[in-house]
Length: 258
Image (cartoon, rainbow, N blue to C red; front, side, top):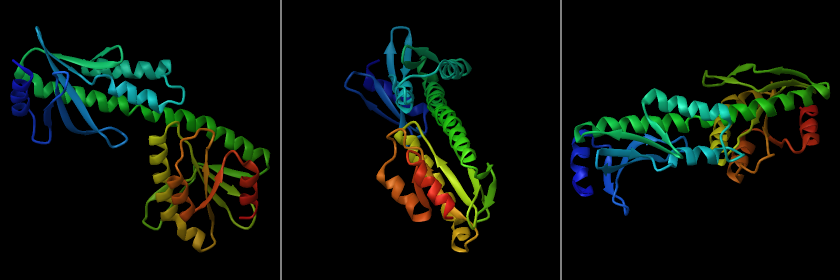
């Protein structure tokens, strides 16, 4: 079966949302409707082999995940989580690629779904970078606040105008009113955009507190890594007071004058 003929059983076994096309290397690219965390569509590639078919992501999943790490590599625990995903779905981690073998054309549709799900779950491990970094920087910020003798409550929830509850990283008591401080930290540019969008949405929903004078809203950017775009900062400036963690003196001034 030549590569163009391989598209026939793939199209028959997959919904219309899946698109098949040829690659210059002779494999079939299946563009799935599944999304990476940054919004890109997930591709699965199918190659015919003497003993059946090989499905692969050509290393795109782990390559994307490595790019989200500030160190450019996975920790041992993150690597174990990737192995656990592969084991659960019977997918093979072949060097930097995720692969799956299929014995017959009528099983190709199911195999595409399985490998696509493996890609999703592996890429979703980028959250471990965010959580790990947030815990580290979050503790550092709390320690700094307490050493400056601010009264700090961590993780309080406030109800927005929409009725949704938002978690406030630090509620700091100083000056005439409390400051609701949101910590923005990320190990990658793609993750940074999602973090900033979440905080901007929260501040927009809570801005009635600032308008009424009940509390001030502060967005604290962890700028120890160059992951923030000017658009991220400008959006936050529209709904809150923006401070960079590299300038703690400015943070102290903002909190004291609240």
